[in-house]
Image (cartoon, rainbow, N blue to C red; front, side):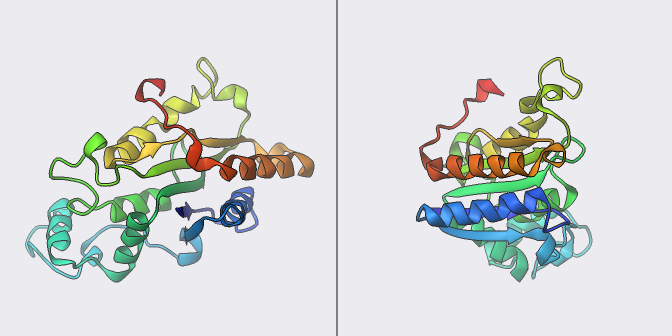
Length: 222
């Protein structure tokens, strides 16, 4: 099977970096084809604008969705975006690897979504949710939290993690047709011993061994 891992962290030696490397190694060892988008290493520009496109629909007023539809009709996305869109179209499983910052994806990764998931190409024209463009593909979040698991539950300090992630699970992934798998979550790796961090990486590798057998999350569960 084909897997795309989209990753962002400003420090390659971080635990997120270790999880990214572990995912690539484990998936390849399991016989999967793997493509990656290391957004920090790529110096990916998260800011949308006319530079997203090689064509112009309306030179007087910029509306991104209309320009996306125009670019979809004329195969005229900027080369760096076309490459990323094709990676998503290619994969059977999309994995986002990131640290939870301010209860969401870091800005660069969110900017990748805003530029790459383009109207007319990845959604629109009645192609949403169960009829989404990426129906039949799977997606999973792999992420770290700064605090312990006890503060990411209902009634906890930060509230339940499922609720925090719902805008990504529902509003980005399911919206575009993906089947969403349970996230892989690591709580407070900076507070762990080296042995504990190694154990978490091994747990991640074990999860990825049979990742395509994982059932999709039910909408009512988050």
